[in-house]
Length: 127
Image (cartoon, rainbow, N blue to C red; front, side, top):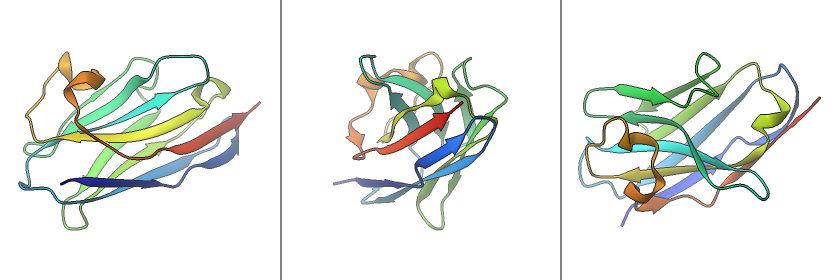
């Protein structure tokens, strides 16, 4: 059973940076798809960034392209999301998710294809 634990959330002013981490255990292969999703109060959960660890391909939502970077440290089984130039609209609960399937756009950021989820970490950006 895959288990995911996020950390690194917090409060930051607009223009600042945060790095989220997602420590994983239980993967049955070194090749899998992983992603970051976020959910603001009253809104649906949306995909932010995704990566396929088998080849390193990445995919980003237009709203974060150029500001966020997703990466994976296979030795540590840890997924990262580096968030720069943060905006108040980035405020949300951030979740990491994974699936052993090899996803590709446009499926990469669709939550229905992910079957392992972390508990979330809160990111608050003030103006």
